[in-house]
Length: 269
Image 1: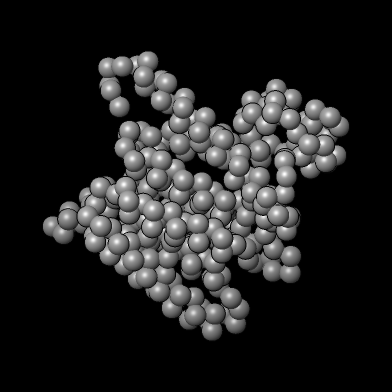
Image 2: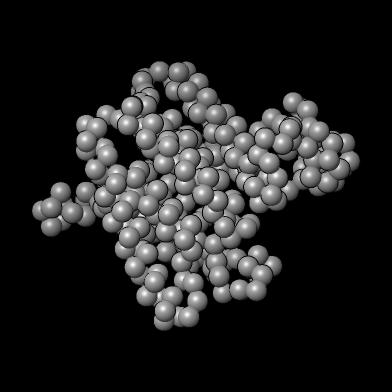
């Protein structure tokens, strides 16, 4: 972005924030319906308490929640802060991607992928499951990315497939060993498939870093998750999807330079 044109920079930053917030609002609604077994195409949004169909002024990302003081305009019941929080997080994420990748096709490309990851995190956090439709959507978007990538097509495909197959295969092998040792499932199939997906976007080296970061974040999540949020019948289980999603997003922002720096210490970059 032009460094000396603050007006344009402000405009494009606001545009990114609005786009991110709107995308986050859509993904939040999508996740909420998936967890409750509702059809994604089930009409317009409505209040979860009274069922009243929401109008345009009720659905302005972030603004509507604060303007209505977190309550439904029609029944007065409280509306979870989750809605505003997700929209704010998405807006912040979009701005970060804009400043990381600039005005290039990579910015919207990774924004869409980040929104898919957000859907994974929200759904897994509430249901302890990652629907396959998120994996499929991410794979299809990666295929579409071949049309806009600045890398040679062959390199794009090979790097992505290696990043997915090697890391997901390794995680599958490790999980099978721990399944046998623990006598229970140690890593869900959806998590293994998610590591395959993240490898498509990150490549093998950065996706390996992603595994490390995701495991650290999962430990933090396990410490913070209240008993009421634990999986019924299996309180030792934790949703790994949110940690993988967050780790992947961090790797999108700085994983490549960090891996290059580390390999450079050994003359391998």
